[in-house]
Image (cartoon, rainbow over all chains, first blue to last red; front, side, top):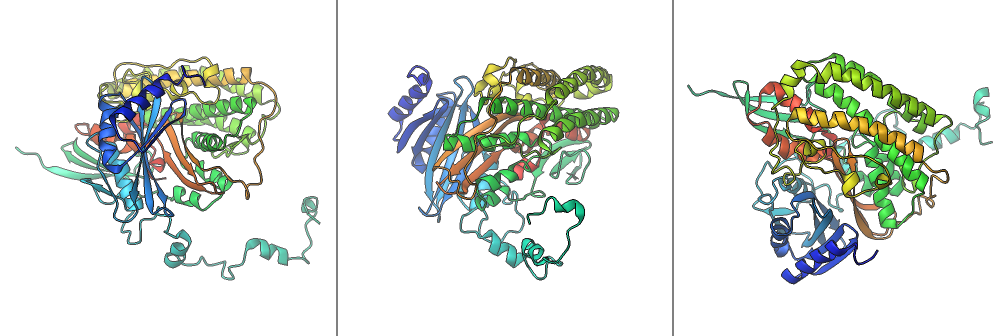
Length: 193
Length: 367
């Protein structure tokens, strides 16, 4: 990739580096720029990107649980409709009692993402209003998208074992037990024996 | 006299709602004064399930995320894996993928024809368009073995090559559909009832549309030329010849016109992909799926689905399972914040009409 093609990407990086204290910044590939910031820098960076740089489309927001580091990584992904670049703004907050500022006054649809992340990861957004329940109903366990939520244990505890499989044996084992059964003619050509 | 406000629950079981979700309406007379989207009837925890399965097992889940349009999910998942891993995809596979995606777009638009006109009370149209959609499903059955869920576009390419005689059959189906579209026009677009219902209803402010996260046909109906296939080209869309339509109006009628134009364009794109398809390999074999690890990293990929930008954010920690797969369908914005604001001031009878024009698909709101 020549320097010329990534001209716009580099321009954006230079602007942001000059203006803000970035922990890390890089061009991932053409049309993808990534910056990592402290949680308190999130609103200034997002507002600057929207109001001054033309990143007006809020494309996505996601949260990743890095349980081994004791942190959540929250990613805001913006899109510039003219320059056709996706800007990733990443920040890390502690898993326990961490919080992020609410940004739904910048983009109203961020409200939905924040409500889902609050519910699924238990991450607090300062000043976030809106109905407490989004997808889950009467949930009294730890937030289910956290890595330490054990889906298997939860299922065993909450749901009963389906009747008809009382022996809880693997189907493949059961089939293997049937050695003396004669295969019907049409099935013989598929047999492994 | 002060009018009394009544609460009306539209859904989750309602023929006008495009799936299992509920819109809680506050109405005065028959005018909506407040709308709230309630989801949670369809949460299957796909994103969590994927964290417990290896990269290939997760792939079998993704097509289930959106029933009317599974292929953009498969394509997004595969491309995200390929981007993190740096896996090359053969040129032929890219053309086959484009053809599959465009067939899926046609099938979705045919379903939309049914939903949009059905919610306006024209019940002949759904019978026709859903019937014709079966011809596309027949093609999918020949190609992939499945009619609705295909599990065809997978990491490294596509699962199998085109079957013998597929090109001719596909071309014949495209010729047939193109003729049928003229009949659809007579039944739906030239129908004065449909025109009266659709014009001036559900208007999105064009100035704010991009900021509000509107994507796909509703955004193009605001006069904004935005299409992932052109803006951030994937597969071989940059080698094919097509145009992005944009019209002023931003009401249900304009959105319908945009889709009317695009279904014809998709037919043309299927023909182009079939004609330009090179011969050669169609699959870059992946290693043993149980031992297949993807290097640490993340990727954000997007596809232009029939309803708008469909995106995947995928994170790998270097193991044989995904760390996080986050799906964002167009309905995540269209069905919640946009719909809640758009419905205010509209008639109750237009609620499902507007929902259909936005392409709301509840399964991708909750995954």
